[in-house]
Image (tube, rainbow, N blue to C red; front, side, top):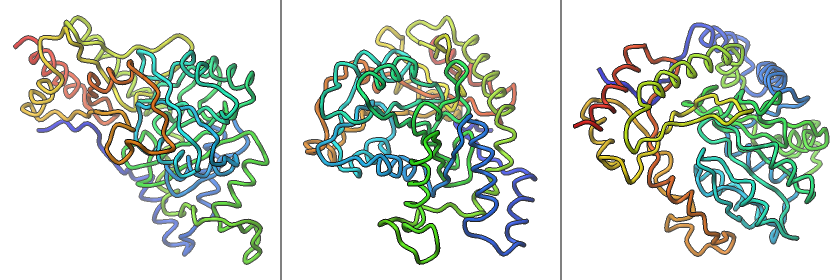
Length: 366
């Protein structure tokens, strides 16, 4: 039997919630969306959560609400999913790339070196479920008067100290089918700024507060009650889900700790990891390459992921783009060559985790 890198399981709570929406006849944005927004805002410790149609839209909407203009610069990481880059390009701003630390998150010192008079926002990515160093990044933003937009697509419930991600600036979350909190497609934007929240609600609903009373050019970025119904029960189970993922991660780390050339993920002090992915690095001193390890896992029918095999802006469609800076990021480049993610999701059985460990150890010792 194969062990997938991720598993989508819809339980009886979600089924009952969806059925209640179907029977209500209220399928578009309605009371279920409102409940999702309420419960997620409470989870993040902020007064506002605004539901939108997907995680990419969350980023696009956040940047539009901040009023970015062509010529403005946004500093982010090159080691992420392309939605991070695409959203900034759609805003009209120019992308500047800071390097990353060994934990895969953006390096505040690299960010600081890029700040100039054109910089308007920092966009850290809480990659794989690990928050960026928001203490250092917030200090940089406060000193320079910059906005923070958190790409928290993979980090629902992660924390820095006593604060949840999504509470340090405008937080952008994805509810794509494989996320820790999912509804197939969907997004959430969190903020403590009343004006930003009001602007987001206006933008997502064609610029209307009152039907046919247009106040601004807007969009149809609404989430349906059907989608929200899938997500609402999961908010209540998120702590349990995260704990199970953390147990699997701890077992993987213990089982893979002494393999030459393989680096297991670590969690810096003061930050909590929600283990959207469990990502190891296969260095040059390992007895096999990352591709070789992937082939061995394929043979054992064990799923894995290469998140991400190239830096976002190194794909042909972005090369030479006038809105993309050409900043040197050697640590991010090395991570793209070494990173491989193993199954860690909450639906794994104990025997599944043992099989993953056995397969990786077998590949290294072959």
